Image 1 (cartoon, helix red, strand yellow):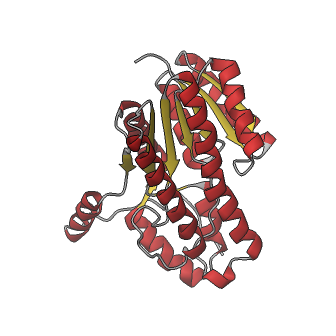
Image 2 (tube, rainbow, N blue to C red):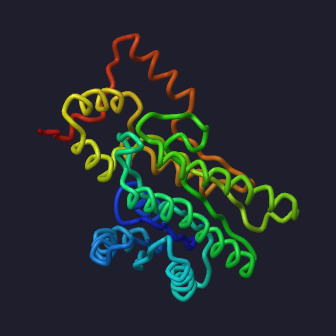
Image 3 (cartoon, helix red, strand yellow):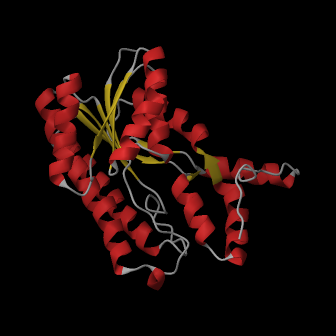
Length: 278
């Protein structure tokens, strides 16, 4: 497979960092972004050696996804460096989960709407327009929190509402491309499942001990490590040539297999490597 130019927003840690790493391992050229300059620089430094070993390339740019100017500047930087953008993976997001709706501050709710909804719209605006100018490309938006299925999850009211909006956005964009009979730009979605990231660990540690114990028990059943999900997801991003591709990790089939394994005494453990102290 020839080297492709990839942009990953929210690429300094967690899932985004995992996506960047997997694209580099496959020899692609990646521009990652994040809101914090030190984290952007640190992520690039930590990945540079592996990038060189794979004949790939990694660079970074500070970008607030909720800013149209920043998002356009990210596109322009990737074009200046690599000549085109073949894949734009919009991973940047903000989540506050495990809390009742009224426990979210107005500032936190606004941050989720700005980053998750406005950020996704900005990504779509910039990437689709740019890809049409260059003759094609792929845009993937990230779902989560029941946003893909509409499943109501207690403790995720504000976050899941924002992600449900992203699901509608993606579906509308796909219909637009199909109505135009124009598949030069492919629109897809990613539902990466419940990954144990730095953000999730911070949220878990903030929970009261009794609530945390229950949440960790659930996490052992549904949770996954970033290094498990991201190779599988990246391979499917690269392989797809279909409009409206939906890449979902935590399928009903996976859940059923886990349930059956539990019935036969195969206890699943994804949290023992982490420490949760009061």
